[in-house]
Length: 398
Image (cartoon, rainbow, N blue to C red; front, top):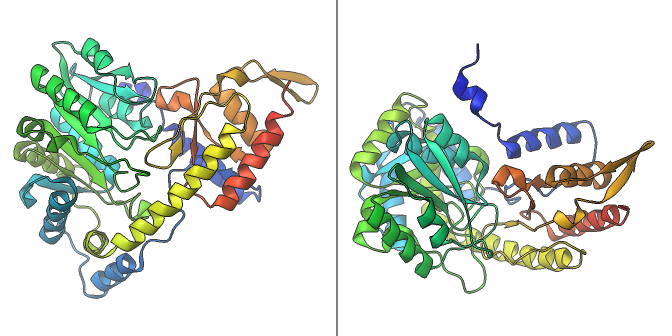
């Protein structure tokens, strides 16, 4: 019999859709993927070369569960330089991807029945991780501009609240939380003695005059109660390399390392050496990629604004749009002899995949059922082709 915890878990919608699209492409079908949060740039040469050197020189054996000391020291240096945070190597746990860092943190701080606040729209895995820890996810709505609603968060706090998870820049909305709202959240966390899990994996991908602020840098108290979570996938085009990390209070990091020791043990040894090269040698490549994403964002915004009924704000970070598409839910299309009503975001997404060959993710996966997520880490030419096909498909609806 399958365990109850697995029966209660909802499979990852993004991973499931990625698999479906991959199967379609394997059958020779042309699909434009606006569903995948994966940069289309190559992993920087310095990273690839460091991996090869580590492999060729025999750095392929077990290492400390929490990561090799040179990488943990490089991460500490990065956090000091970029985020104004002072961590020692002992306050850092290197993990097999940023996703494992988040799960390690949730499993380490949560007891059964603890409540963890998640701000919606939110990344698909937060809620399920909380449930797997036998804690209770409390989903609260963001403000209309997808920024934090301190009032909504305050109203959700109970005597069982253990933590809040935030993600800035945000997946799926692209919102970048400003210092003022982070200060207000830090004060709220202090008042109610709750942890802050701050997922900052998109911090290098910010546009215009916006700035990334790590909430742990707000005050000593915020530093003491924050677990800062990050990884190499997005900024360094290392999605398949599976390398992430967490930094935080020494006792929590020690607990996370203990938990990881009974799951995966250390992340891949030679990849850790490549991670050092990413942190120390790839600033130019990261900036070039960021500039390219900003141009793609601007073009996709122009195209989305031209589509009747799609309401898309301007994201300040990451590489996603999260428009409301509910005005299309009462539209119909013909499938053989049958008229089919779109009905919801799932139906809207299925129609675009069927009729236009364009994959987007329905907002239900992100606790935002009237929306869909468009990812734009693809070329301008691909965005143009995809938006042309979407416009043609939507024009057929009645």
